[in-house]
Length: 339
Image (cartoon, rainbow, N blue to C red; front, side, top):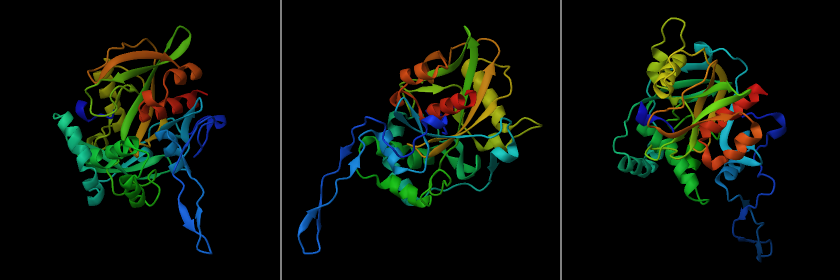
């Protein structure tokens, strides 16, 4: 599972949807001419396009409440859970029929997939559980493959970040989802991830464990992420035993592998986050430890840090370009829950 890892609702006063942060200077599309009623060519109104990729995302999806901190838009949306307990029946529903992405979308992302495999030849095409649709804060998932996710979701991130120009892949993905990719995964393999905010109390303040993704990972290299994290796999849902929720089982394994912690309390469900660059969901959890935590993580990370949960300091030190979208969503949900 090592090679297939990736990698809000805010407090009311901080929610802004589809608006550029104050002080932003949007770029503008060239002025074009349109015929008037008497045949003369008159300039059309100039359309402002934010230069920042995250601001452009907020403009594209005006109904979504993006994470905004310190007047910066993060490429993430966070949907808080109204309940803290994990319920297999309510959180996820797993279908057995495999997902097959739209052929045109998959074909358009093939070049991106090939570039990932050329740079990371050991990448494994493992099973993933991908969103079919979302109902309130629960999701319907179905089996898919990691390579299909790279071609239909990670390729969207590459297309969006490379240029402020046309985005035919995203246009197609949005259309296949009926204009609402946050509730429909139709046409793509929107693999669901699990991100866990591990918190501890130290020196009178709560800290959260972050890890910087190593340069050699296939996605989000150099960005800070919460740890542990991973992809939801179909077996995580199908192999539930006793009263232990399968997502908890996977979290326990990841926690032991990435931090060495073998005994941890039951996690708190924070909500569902969305990586808006890739249009894929993330189940966001929290585990609070009574003692300290070792900061030695796996080779997926080249650095780790226990960061105080001080809103001003946390977001000032981690602007959008330094965090994974999943981390931004998880931290925003954690902050909202604590507030």
